[in-house]
Length: 137
Ligand SMILES: [Zn+2]
Ligand SMILES: [Zn+2]
Image 1 (cartoon, rainbow, N blue to C red):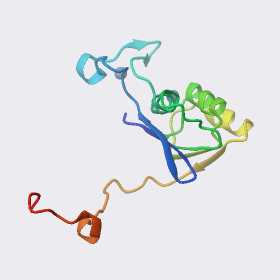
Image 2 (cartoon, rainbow, N blue to C red):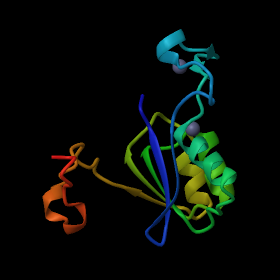
Image 3 (cartoon, helix red, strand yellow):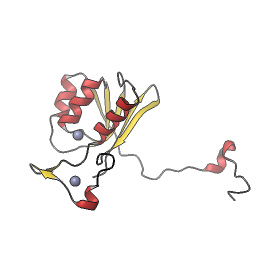
């Protein structure tokens, strides 16, 4: 499953992440899943990867909104709450977890939104700053 997480505050993107293996480690698609207790434990979830990116860059997530593809798992929800996230926007429900319960009891606002269109319409010709050079024609 492809999941993404973007932390935003005051219309600025603070950090992003998607679910995947540790840097330099093989992916499940290549070597198969690493299953413990019926769950694949090879990858970090999108929220964790976004969180670690924020940590690496020394960015605080206090007061930020988390846009996540699916409702967090319980572990990620707790990490986001502890990081100071005040709002989560989710585009689809995940399996049953205690995430919703933890978010609610911590005063984190949950907004369920329609999945945006997967196609991005971008007409580059409309932007004067994106004029083609002789080379790119
Ligand atoms: Zn896997
Ligand atoms: Zn998670």
